[in-house]
Image (tube, rainbow, N blue to C red):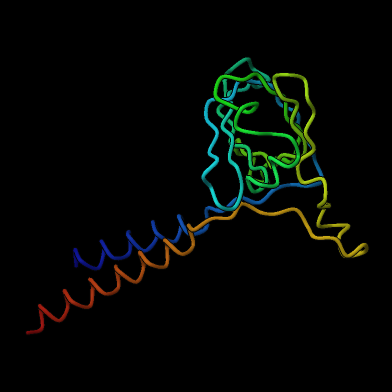
Length: 167
């Protein structure tokens, strides 16, 4: 009985993780200003920026900003030397649909005042069908794959435990 309860709890936990990818509301835009706390240049799908910004109540919130792949961002003018920890930047973009502190960046104003258009070659998915341009990207995530691997491991473990009880 305890094994069955544990299996149910683990399955629910892995399923919740697998559904964690972010969706963005491209019908709204949001502007933020704050200090960069971390820039992840090594992400193969996009450069991820973490930044502290004040909310409407004056509380500091850690925002995760999704941009474009490193080579695209650098060709647009944002490099490792002008986009680094501690820099004061302003960003504009599309907020996460679930209201979490995630933003799909459309432009960045760097600490030196340079304005960098991000995702400029892409359009809103709602209008892309009419002009055949690619839609804005969603957060690329390995979470569904990790969840499936976890479910597979959990199922395998449960089968082995049941076989041990039977024999």
